[in-house]
Length: 389
Image (cartoon, rainbow, N blue to C red; front, side, top):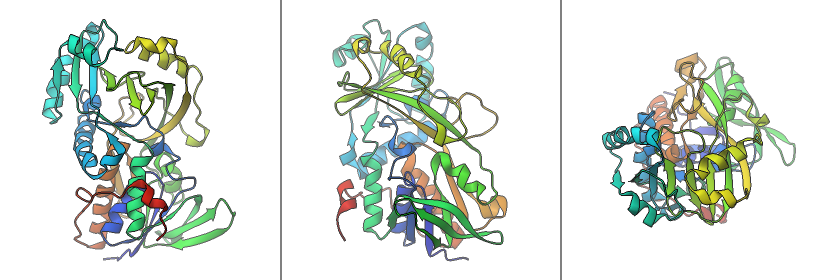
């Protein structure tokens, strides 16, 4: 079996969780990120720590993954999480038609649900649309989209991982049909160098297709950008979802002193050319105002977009119906290119599980029977990342 003593991870988002897992298993790890850490998709979402309820009606596998990871992250990274709970509300007869299936599928997935009277929901959240017809409590929570993953980076670094930001991979080093390292450029100094590795992990999110193409490989990746808007003021204390299959403009997430409206979605090619279409902002206000009418008098505080690295299967053209699950590929077995593994799909809520699955694959390739420890290992505070050794 190859030893893969040194592993290079490409991507400063979910890659931080993988660096943490591999460092705990005794591997020597170097992570490279072309920008600032978390400047891609992982640091640019609305901050929902999913209970899984948002996906039970159309993506049960992702729902179960989210609920499992929700409980683990509350335990290992409590500092970065606000356990404020969520409400799914029905506003019309169409919403009501999903209620029984929603409750049944949540229970089947093991997600706690609590149907409550409308009067109780309005007492809990006075800003809700007073004409709502039903409400269900779920164990959603809010995470800090930047600080939570920095807990993984801090712990990985403390356990010996090398983290290099502003370091862009310009090529994969190849020996025949095997990847033996990466060529990189320091974007601050414009200097170039090479990093030898026994294994390279492509965890570049929506840019993973570009990395795979350096080895002549196509992967089933579909970038799906989306727009989010924040407004000043915490309009609700709970996460508010519309009781329907996940779609456009159907969620409001309280985040510190802001409220985040989400989200739109479309399919795209090059993630570097994505920007927020101006018509998406008023559309989000119109749709979310049905949940919380007070949005009608507010203006955007900030508008941003990010590309989800969706795992494409089949020919689905609706970005809301493409699964939010994840997978990792051993390109030696899949494509005859040794020394390269790709991790794509998933959500910020499932970053630890994504890392575990990939690290398990790497251990299988090396013949090492090293169990995962990230389910129980408490993460260091994110501030530890900047402490001197």
